[in-house]
Length: 193
Image 1: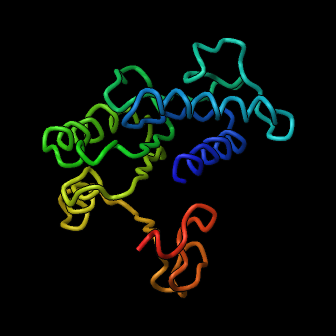
Image 2: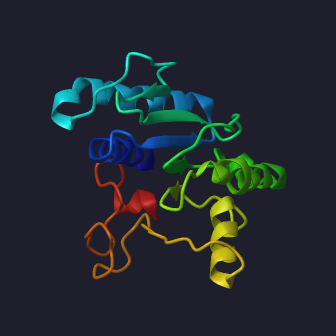
Image 3: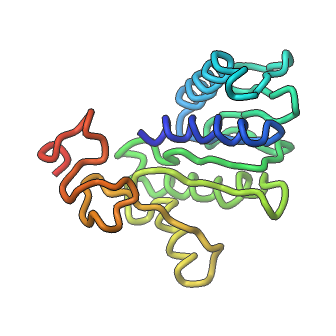
């Protein structure tokens, strides 16, 4: 799913620029630690092929550095982020559950974290933020950011929308046929409908 794709995006980014400082945020500290650990394990297992050497000064499995000064800090959306500049920020599923999605205060908290402390960690004009997540509510953080972008009142966000079922083979970013589910190994057309 999305989290696996983001793990590989981290590895790809560090392969291309081992000095890149990456912050990864998600709704859950457990998922953040797991993502940090699994990413680090993949880098360690394929270090020579990837050209990424990890520093011996690793704070934890969810906070580690390359020997070139880049690395990953993976934490929950509500974690303290000040003093941690980033070249790339990845926000993975800022809302964790159906109940959270239908709580105005949870949606507000996630949105304010993304727009406030997390956004300010971008260290320079070339730094980027990626927000990956399935839509959970019309007023979720993605919806608010896109609405502000569309109205010209907020920052511009480029979008890559991948529907659960392909609706147009000509424009499908995954090259699927109409009606084909996003992950054929996990879902069939009937289960997604």
